[in-house]
Amino acid sequence: MAVVLDFEKPIIELENKIRELKKFTNEERIDLSKEIKRLNERLEKLRKEVFNNLTSWQKVQLSRHPDRPYTLDYIDMIAEDFVELHGDRHFSDDRALIAGLARIDGRKVMILGHQKGREMKENLERNFGCAHPEGYRKAMRLMRMAEKYGIPVVTLIDTPGAYPGIGAEERGQAEAIAYNLREMAGLKIPIIIFVIGEGGSGGALGIGVGDRIYVLENAYYSVISPEGCAAILWRERSKAPSAAKALKLTAPELLELGIIDGMIPEPLGGAHRQPGLVAEEIKKTIVRNLKELSELPAEELVEGRYKKYRDMGVYKEG
Image (cartoon, rainbow, N blue to C red; front, side, top):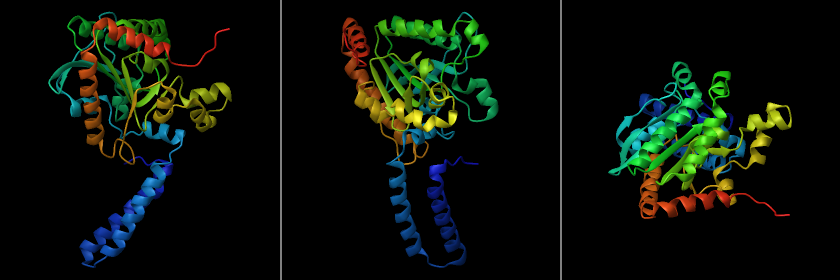
């Protein structure tokens, strides 16, 4: 059964009504084309009114939509010859963070990304897209391999955050993420980042340091989830919509603040409505940026990345 968000209900009801009228027309041989046309026009207007005026919290809800394309879906649509690589060579293979070699428009790339599940069994296997330390260590192992052979890195972020369980903490979750931040800053290969759904906290940053950062129109990128922020500030998770607004976590806000380099547009209703269009836009963005970044000397690439992150934020010197 398809998931319907609260703000989508009027649209779904209208879509169902149009579907019923079309079915009735076919079965009873009665011409209702004028009524159907009128409802379609009303539907198009309603879609624009709803999806062009989404609040920050509504975009967060849309970023978590279970029908939304995940990392493996995008890899299938934008890449060829994908070969998944496994294990961190220390503890195990983390299924919440996948990685492998592929070709995009004929160019070899190393693709990394968080992977959620569709069904409960798969979600448990993928840990709901929340990576363990071994996931981040696997990512760094393969990014170093990519650097050794001069292969660019593409990462697809979609996680509410790194897994905070006791086992993960015992195995050095914070150290693994911090280590990746430092090492990614100095990798002498192009790194292109895409936030395709949720971009939460250090779980996102663990594979999120790069030369170019793009966020999908209905994705979010934030230091903490709205629920987590609400629980800390107000001791009440129901304040999540207020927290989402205050965090300025949507793509247009992030672009205005200079945190990201661009926004990938989505069709009305979200990426799951027409995933092929979104995938094509991601692919074009990758190809364009690889062409630009590959022309830069390694030292200039690293220096530009360093400056990019140093320039973020506002501060005063006393």
